[in-house]
Amino acid sequence: MKTIVITGATSGIGLEAARLLVRQGFNVLGVGRNIERCRQAEESIRSENPGASITYFAADLMHQREVVRIGSEIRTFLDEKCDGELHALINNAGCVRSWYMTTEEGYEQQFALNHLAGFLLTHLLLPALQKAHGRVIMTGSESHKGIRMHWDDLMLRRRYNPLTAYKQSKLCNILFAKCLNDRYGSSGIRAYVVDPGLVKTDIGNKETGGLVSLIWSLRKRHGVPPSVPAETYSFLCRQEPAPDGLYYHLCKEKDYSKEVTSENARWLFEISERLCGIENFMEVAE
Image 1 (cartoon, one colour):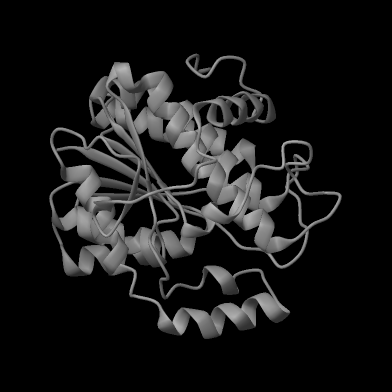
Image 2: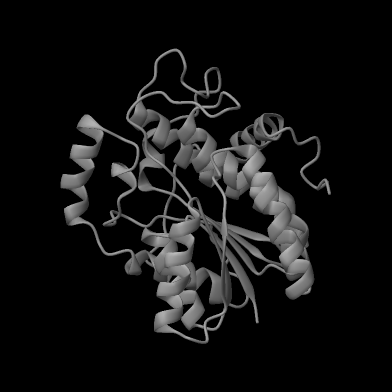
């Protein structure tokens, strides 16, 4: 049975992807921020599918110490119960903010959770992915097309705009996927970005306020249910051999920003290594 890790798996797209992939016979390891929400999500999936192979782990991926902790726990689980193999890692956890907020490391929160958390978790699980010739899938957004990287001020400290920060974090997702393919494609790993489109989730209402929350409440009414984009994650996990594309929407390849170049991808990768305290992405500390 192939194993898939999904972050942000207690609600929205992550939960629906977990439901679908379990039904299709995958062993799913879900990650959520809240222990009680993890328990509820697991019970919900098991109530629909009593034989489901589903296990949840709780961690607040906003903090790098938590990413390191849960990465170690998942690696131990994979070694003990999955022959050390991971078929796919879906880096889906994300956030929206209304104002400038930082993590305990001092990083802007949208950049930290939407990009760095997935970057660090991928690093920690890379040996298991390589052993399985696995796939890494990021939850992206069409909004990555309207932005360039602010290389001189990645955290946007000098002039913060929450929408700019979100767009940049989504550009980071696809640049990271691009660099994974450039660096590790020859070892059998494939990386993708899913554009879920406008979806009826609460991402824009969590820890936001005022105008951002109001606009999202109005906008999401026109979105599709999370079960719709879940199909694209399933498609990318099921296809054999692994598809060659990079950016997908509704199970089809889609054009992406001209900012997605090997040079920009490499530069972001090297900066992210420093921000995560990684000396060599290939070397995973025990």
